[in-house]
Amino acid sequence: MSTRGARAGASSAAPAERIRREIERWFLVEPLLFGAWTAHRVLAVPKIKTIRVQAGRIEYNPDFIARLTERELVALLQLEALRIVLGHPYQRRKADVELSYQASNITLQECLRTSLPVPRAHEVFGTHEHDDQYFDYYYGRLVERASGVAPSKATSKATSEATSGATSATSATSEATSATSEATRGAGGSGGSLRDYAHPDDGGLESAGGWDADDLFAELVREVVARAEENRAWGTIGGKLRERILAAQRPRVSHAEILRSFRTSILSKERYLTRMKPSRRYGFAYMGSRYALRSRLLFAIDVSGSMSSAELATGLSIVNQMFSPVVSEIDVIQFDTEIQGDKLTLKRARREHRVLGRGGTAFQPVIDYIDAHRDYDGLIVYTDGCAPVPARPKRAKTRIVWLFTHEATWRAQERGMRHLGRSAFVLP
Image (tube, rainbow, N blue to C red; front, side, top):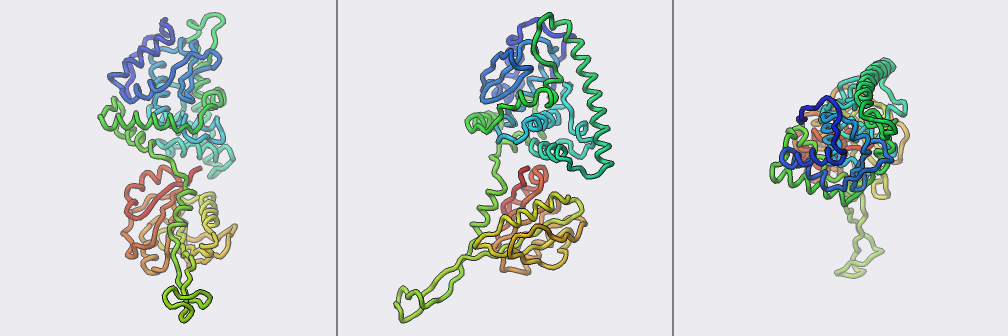
């Protein structure tokens, strides 16, 4: 997305007027952002440091806005409008507010690549493998890092050095911004700096403390996006970001809810005769029928080399959750590019499991397995990776759920897997 040319310093116009002028310009050039912004009340709140969105309000500190250059203001307003469009203030509340705000900022910077001192993913994690991901993905990685989960000491050191370098660069940018702002601040000025805005340890709790699930405003945002899609009124938003915005409007359903629904859907009736119940037609002269609910479930777990120990532990936990009076035993197979080892039949929850394989990933061997063993009512495939979409199973009655470890992988695979059953990703 493009930004206008900037003047050298902050504008002398009133903060409310500066915001109004930019939003009015969006009416023609950024209709999606305009619609999202104008669905909210915009209020000057001097007691906060910077700017925040919550509960249908956009609140800002006038002195903070007054100190921004035109270029900084344009980038800031675009960032906040996109935060609304992606629904970050109206998703379910995360446990760690500061990490939630940081995950949101990383996501927005990956989308817009602004000149604001908001770090990109590689500056935070020290590697480009996390570039161009999503809010829940970044939140999960930040929680893992905060919990001390790291792949190796070398990676941790590289991440630390990269983050340190990014912090130094950000500090230099902040110092330059502060120097520019000092001339316009004046005695007794209030409000925070761009560093307060960009870093969760300075402004995260204040900026994201009011985020929570809000069906009303979530629906308003979905309507704004739906109108933009219907009228092709996306402004300067490119195709890749457009797909991400559309994907963000899909209602989030917990993988646990999908699995509960799946477990119910695979129940089958087993008929048996009994003299304890009369036949409906012939009475006690013939045996009557009773039906027992039963279900045969197969759980296929990806044991390729890219699956971490934590992800494998999560898979075992999901197996344990599937036990019920009806699902009294579960068959478990392991796969990478082929089925590894023998089938394991579990009749109770287990805390640990021996892992085989650790090669690449292929889904076809799992489909071939249920074609060869046709007495399963349901199959759950738990995986982290992208692999070629397999052929349809020959026994269409076997219901399938594809459960991905990360949202990004699910997004990449979901469309191609639709003809093979439902799919979901594990919420962090």
